[in-house]
Length: 225
Image (cartoon, rainbow, N blue to C red; front, side):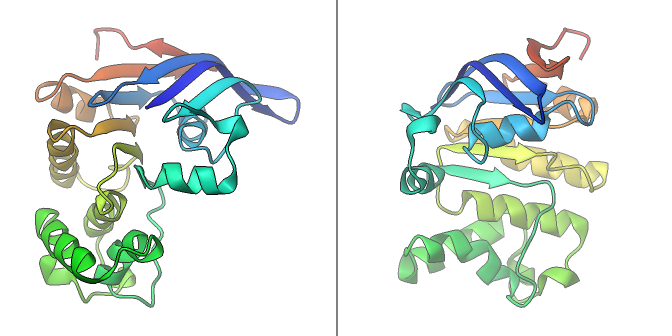
């Protein structure tokens, strides 16, 4: 699905990531850890072709990202759901329309959108907030809405950047449970997080591989987690 082979990324003459090797297999669950500034967000951007490796190779669904056109990237991203750290929404649109935007953009509106949206909003516990505007939402509601928007197109891969960074522990566990359920449905999950307690909670429920970025390189995290 997504594979990095000796991938590196740098800018301004410096190297942020180097010698990165990883294959995200179908149905796998990965955590990505590391201190702030280590390159977790950059790593995720390489995975969904928002950035291109300065050396090495990154492939999305067997396509080399360095050779993909904008249309190729757009098509590949229809198979990916990305939960960004900042959870940006269009403030003038109600929550239901914000969540449905990926279907609208893909031209998959009508009955499919209505059915998927209703089911999904119930699944993330936001049915009662369908008409709310984004500024009216709590932090936990925004995070759940971001996850709903990321998965409404039924993607094969879900990439989440610090999805529990701004919410309390109880809501973090709820969001984690949603991601675990998605993995049990066969989705490939990659979560970037600094929250080791969240990783421990996940490992009690699902077989998760924990990776750490240190010194610009990717390592398997130790059993101390």
